[in-house]
Length: 545
Image (cartoon, one colour):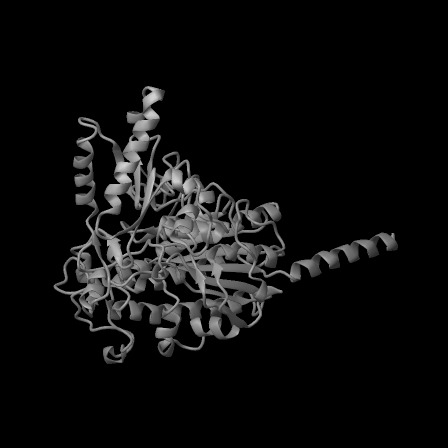
């Protein structure tokens, strides 16, 4: 009997020791629209406990990039957590043209499910279109579902895609009510801790404040002037300048939407993150848990005012305080050196194209709607009375395949001729850099350094279009002289931070090239679990070996 007890004790000790080699909690932080250079440009404004703590006491990759296009939010989050690219995981955009349904679909749209928390909210949501597992899925599979996985964001896709297919919950901001909601994919009712958080009505508290610069505005020397011709104003404001009276702006903007256009949106999400740690008791048992956080507010602000605005700088100064607050809470609730945090971005951003032009740098706005109309007129000369193009979006052309489904002796030739006509037409337009028919993409290599290779990795043959094109550097589709966007294959959109911090992470930095797809397999090695099913990235060996 004593021998049996001794064996059991040894087995228990071995299992306990094994569990202790892993972090109790992994926290994945994605900042929506963050350049790597923000860490340098705003560094003097950061405190010691936020970004600097991650940079100085963790491991930083200074040459990390997206290795595909389009560099959008949906594909970015899917790629970070799956360790692969849209060619495998299938999230080819935030929205895309569904060739079978003949309509545009959202990357997390699924009408089989309904909203929970607000019947009128955006809740027909699920990760159904994600074709590979995520690191969070693999953690659930490894632990026989004992590990807890929770995803939160101001955007539905920022919560849903990182949390994966097996999450215990995913919650996102409802701009109609100022509350956080979910989908029946996860639960029929909100957990008690989410109800309690919503009952605090923190959105009302933040909207009751005035967003002014955290520091005296004269100190924001890393940005351009506050009164800039390149910044898009919010409805109800004569200019995009401080201060922003959110309560007044709420009168001219829908519901609680104005909050996500202010730095207070990050404050609200940080409070939800702390509530989720307590409410779900993350990191409290013998299994590793996972919390994914996606800060969406920088993207909303960055689109409107551009990367050189005081609004963006103030947002990151305040986000630094949020990161510090979150890390302090993790120290207290989970334990110092008992958790792992990684921080990255789903994409970066280009300067406002008009500002580039005014500084005699190449750039411009690609008039997509007029280009599409003119292209359709041009094709009528060759195919009168026929509508050859179903849709142009995400810099891809979707052909109307019904046109080419007739006589097999001629349909293939017609498709080839139409493709050549469209390719040559687009290639001749100002602002277009390269055009690639689907047949060319099939034959292309996966060279990391080429635009063609990036298009190949972002191209899913069942979901993507028939022709892909890439604009010249500094060009964006549509738009006006105010505001900017992202999505290109160039470094201004691909170069993002990757920071690791915590248990098992050595201090240091590396300027070696790494793809965003290296994050998930690195976590797999740290957690000693299987790589995500479609993973094409490699572990960051210089950090963990």
